[in-house]
Amino acid sequence: MASTPTYPWITCPRPNPRARLRLFAVPYAGSGASVFRSWLEKLPPDVELRPVQLPGRENRLMEPPLSHVSTVVGPLAPLCASLADLPFAVFGHSMGALVAFELVRELRRQSGLLPMHLFVAAHRAPQAPNPEALMYDLPDEEFIAEVCRRYDSIPVEVRENTELMDLMLPALRADISICDTYAHREEEALACPVTAFGGLEDPCAPPEQLEGWRHQTSGAFRRVMFPGGHFFLQASQGPLLDEMARDLARGGGGGR
Image 1 (tube, rainbow, N blue to C red):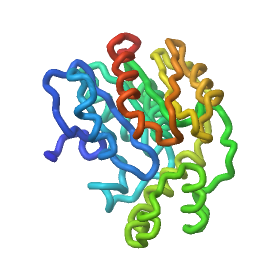
Image 2 (image 1 turned 90 degrees about the vertical axis):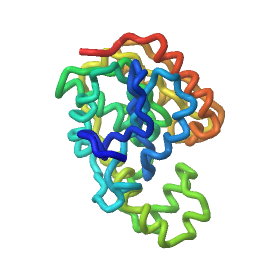
Image 3 (image 1 turned 45 degrees about the vertical axis):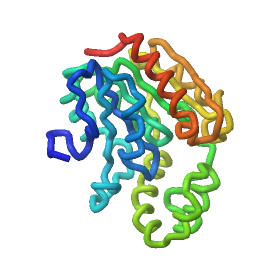
């Protein structure tokens, strides 16, 4: 990929000269921008997908990962602002939802910008306390076991590949640290619509905890549930993107 002022933080797998809006997408813990590549064929033709690539994974594997939300959104916000020549929306799944929320608040602080829509998935409302014990600093074996227990997110063949796990662990541990060390600060509610997505069988973000996202917006709010657990976005990708497309087609709610 050619170098741009926002790369490598914000990727552009397919530039879209017909775009009327951009969608910044923040991946879940331990993953990279490539998890959104399959969205390219399913998003509306007037949307340009801009997946976020955090340090420590994929093409940024040799960079040290970041373990606190402020160290992520601080440098990311001005890069997003530089792409605000078009309206934009922000999506995040799990850890990515928390980063997406704080990214929007940092954009508002730094430049007065807001997205036309914020989409959060598979994460309890940020003001809700973490019901689980902290795990980011557990020894490796215990840490991996706990990640699997909570999220069922590491395939057996990956767990049994020591070399691959050694590559994955630093970014995964840093991302879990972002969640574990997060301390919510009360601020004015966001003046943009928020849609919260969840899996009906996800114990990490049950409906009542997703409902709390309602208090983070002074605009419209929707909660949409899909079959499945924490990674419902894989099995329910089509319906999820359909719901997002409906919200984006409504427009409004963003800008300065």
